[in-house]
Image (tube, one colour):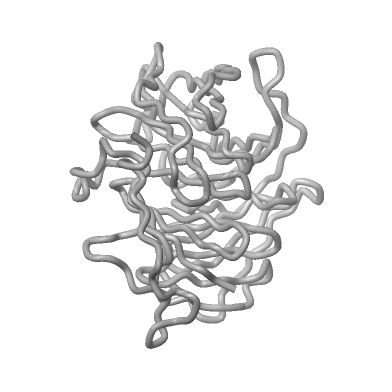
Length: 305
């Protein structure tokens, strides 16, 4: 079953770029249920790679699934029955160890800012093997209350604002962990220039990166110093997904991945030769391999240096 779902095509010439473009050294699918959904833009894919293997969560109309595999794409565990009793799962927050928080919200209520927010968020932690580990609930008692945006190790990050709607004057980022069925805040960082619509990812050191989708510029939030600083790229690029590994940040932009350091300095740009119909929406990095994933759970692995 695993070999049918994870077809690996080895033997491709991938150790050196082909006319300036890197070719994949492996290609496989991590969720056979999604192979026919390549044009379903509602499917959201969350992915993490580490030295122990790969974890993929897909959220779509057909349900929520969690798949773990080794680094060559051989499936180790798979669950397609994930659901929340009290609400709808709308977000996944992968952790570096391959476990993942699933976030569900409901029931929704409307407020004067013209939008809606859930009256509560339920968070359920699953291991990479699909085992339920713990859960807790966040109550949204007032508009602009905390919503979860990122996770790393035992830490969660929640975001809140001083006002509801799409134009808050101030944002707060709450760093903490679940304790006794609730959230215990360790520190809070205040931003007077709100960051909207950014990609949120955590570094190994526990900093939060907020990456602008239009430019790739980053706001680095340091919970120890309780500060947020802007990092600008020398050459702005549109970004569809991002991953942090060590002291480096990898930014997916169309058919290339830009590798930068924490100061925004460009270290490398990898241009890829994708297979037919492959449109990556997520990525992960471990060792000298970079994994790109599309909405159908198809993965292409590239060697990088």
